[in-house]
Length: 203
Image 1 (spheres, rainbow, N blue to C red):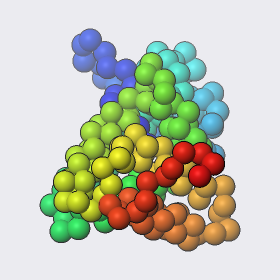
Image 2: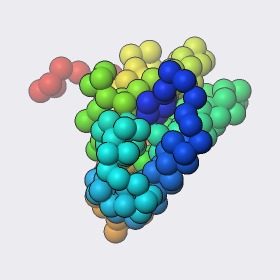
Image 3: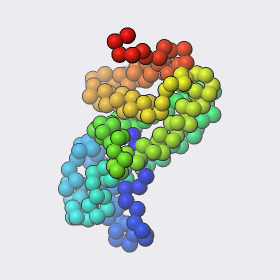
């Protein structure tokens, strides 16, 4: 996942610019859901009844537009992390939250791959989505580790990459709707403090 704003002006938008912005985000959300995150930006602009130049004035690239589209989902994921912060079983709470990310990523074909590709690019607007997600996940992970239920060598960055990989695997195997849940259960087993840490390659 990633998600902060696509491009924040130094001053408030004019009413017409705000309408164009909102139309573009709405049409992008529909197009990404129907056609995947590689949907044509020209088609999105046309459906929003604006020129492609207007789209690029608001969103300098595809990742900036994706970032804007996923703000609502980001808010939901962050709210869920707060709800799970007091769960009785911190390890299961962490995995449940990771599962919510998988579910969100599954709503848009290509999102998981885009998030994985953007994770190492600090200049990407989409990578900025990962900042609040990483912070929220790190809090859940730290609580689970403090309880002794999760291994100390687990990092939130690895978990988010693993979560995106699970979402991508599920996307590419639509004939197996239970795949993501099974992979998440394997993740749960691997996170537990009694699980053996992986040895050097070849062991």
